[in-house]
Image (cartoon, rainbow, N blue to C red; front, side):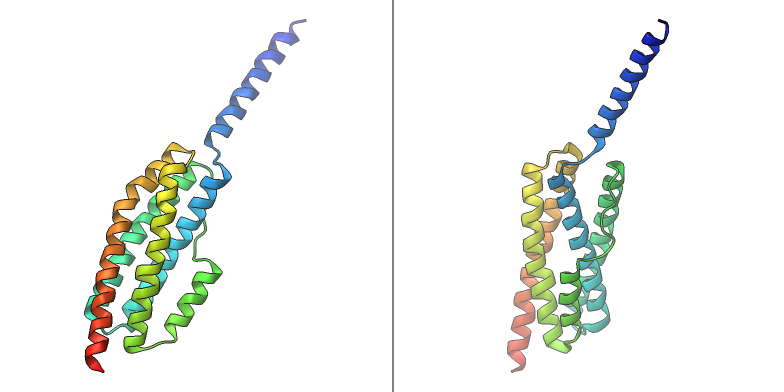
Length: 177
């Protein structure tokens, strides 16, 4: 009869451990957000490193360096957040993002600059801002929601800078014609 209290205590301990593990787990939507955010961040860094190699436009190079620096920091923060939730985010861009970078990389001079600024600067940031806005409203995990909310002003600033750079790059190309 002395075994029964031990079984109850053991069962209660197992239940508490299960609850603790469940508390750390993420919903599928929160995991999907972290996955897409990680891939977007890695794509931004990779394409911006390419821009640092290929572009001869100083404004594009300054923007690209900023993207490398700031997205690298954000990627590290996302990685730490994900690890705290026992989730391993992707460590590279998606296959589609890699394909887009290859296409951009095949271009040269002004064509490269225009495509990089438009696709990586503007379009990718529009998508990322939308992704983070949704997560800041709908994420179930408080830490994931806080991360999305914290990053939004930076991403919006990147988008604004990219739009300004796009106008400059397109204007300088028009002036050469």
